[in-house]
Image (cartoon, rainbow, N blue to C red; front, top):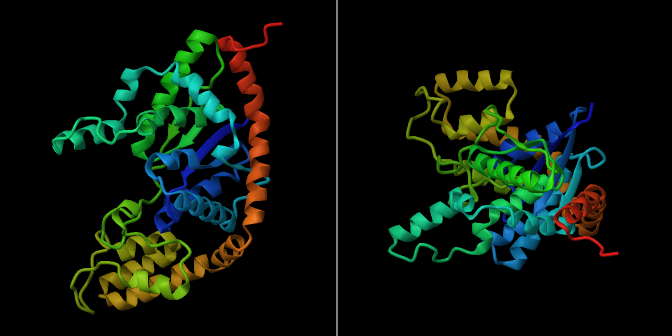
Length: 335
């Protein structure tokens, strides 16, 4: 039986934080060990250009994110790990799919509709500041997925629409040119945690409330101490349900440790003590990976070699498929 192909992209626009680790990186690395699946993980640097026009930030983020996945133990002998821009077949496929993508479908994309709504609310032209990168983002995402005929695409709920759009575009291409594409399925893991940030909102770069994943010990402790808490005194029972400290603890702790902390909350643990224990737990779990991360950042040549090797594995699959697609649409030798 052929393996399920699973594909995940990581946009290179920032420094990975605890929320990225718990919600995406950790489950993806575990999934890559599945014997019944072939995993594709890529650095989405073309996607990064949609929202970031700072070349140094895109470059540095690419290095940091690649180092993060490798430091955390991604087995590149099992998973295909590559940089999007190292696979030229992807942008070419993007154009073939663009010629099949209905404009009406693009008009319904959440990101575009949100930008238009914000402009209208501000009294601007509906398309003010909207680039074709933002508008046609779903087509590039479709190319990422369909280039490797992925069966499963693990996503958050906000990305389900894009996988459905990829299915629509693939179905339309198949209808016109024959069966070339698998219709992908969005996979949402309801058990994956969405961490809260320092201010109690979802941990997100856009909110500026993140705890970077590989902070040095002193800075990690400082960030954890900044987590917003209520004014309950030591000895006062504390509610675990609305506590960012407890939520992050639960994401890193064993079930036994979680129950111990739940009991401590009920008994009125001081916030300072709870944060101290949280720091020790997170620091212990990430310490060895942090050392590997720092070593990788100091050796970008090695990271580059790993990405090039992954791109070559990816192109072993993308080249023959694109050749078939070129022939299917009529782009082939005349002789």
